[in-house]
Amino acid sequence: PRSYVITGAASGIGAATAALLRERGETVIGVDLKGTEVEADLSTPAGREAAAARAVELAGGSIDAVIACAGIAAPIALTVSVNYFGVTDFLEYLAPVLAKSPAPRAVVVSSMASLQANSPELVEALLSGDEPAAVEIGAALAAAGPASGYLNYPSSKRALSRWVRRECISERWAGAGIPLNAVAPGTVISPMTEKLLSTEEGRKMVDSSVPMPLNYHSDSIVLARLLAWLTSEENTHTTGQTIYADGGADATLRGDNI
Ligand code: NAI
Image 1 (cartoon, rainbow, N blue to C red):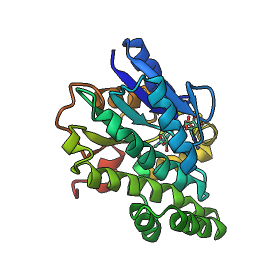
Image 2 (image 1 turned 45 degrees about the vertical axis):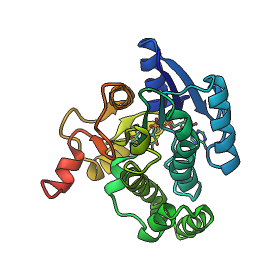
Image 3 (image 1 turned 90 degrees about the horizontal axis):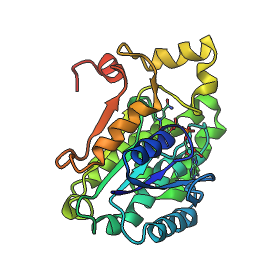
């Protein structure tokens, strides 16, 4: 079996991916705040380092793929710490271990929101790797009200998709034979969206910014299958991509102007 490390494995997309891979006979080490093999807080630098070290230990030093699903959508600065540095730092710790695998793969979960209005200043701070500066900008956005606070989320995902594209061709990833991609769900029915999708008003709000003409909202398994393929041995040449599994939302919003 291949050995997978999955963050956010206690819930939603991460849990569905862990279950799918286990069903297929693979070994999965889940990472989450609680309820998984590794319990850690990916919002802090120390939590990320401890989580990576523990995952390597539990895997006996051999990891074939990392799938980073952990994320939050709150209109607060913590969102940039979890969604951006909780992914990029964690992957960077594990890259040298992945590089020893005969078929190493990495994938992160971005979002349709990576295409929404964001804070360019925050995106730049994230891409420069300056966490204190990014958190300061995120906190100022949050203090200015909920609409502005929400910008933390699309900014974190925009930066994550750009990070994947920028990093994938480096020595650490392409140079070590590691495809590095992102997936971008539309609206997924999961604990993250449950409350919002339970009212007609909430559904209207979501659907007006993320229109899904093909098959409407998805279950987590839809993303799990794509994440499993991107991290399988079959994926040898797809890298740096943000793959939209969004029921046509990206095609609706951007048309053929790509
Ligand atoms: P979820 O809320 O069901 O699962 C997220 C998991 O991340 C939870 O188990 C949570 O405990 C974990 N997590 C949060 N903060 C953490 C931290 N500091 N340290 C460790 N683990 C932490 O949400 P869902 O829907 O499965 O989301 C997974 C990913 O998909 C997220 O990155 C989200 O932004 C993204 N996404 C979700 C969409 C949706 O409609 N549900 C749409 C687009 C993207």
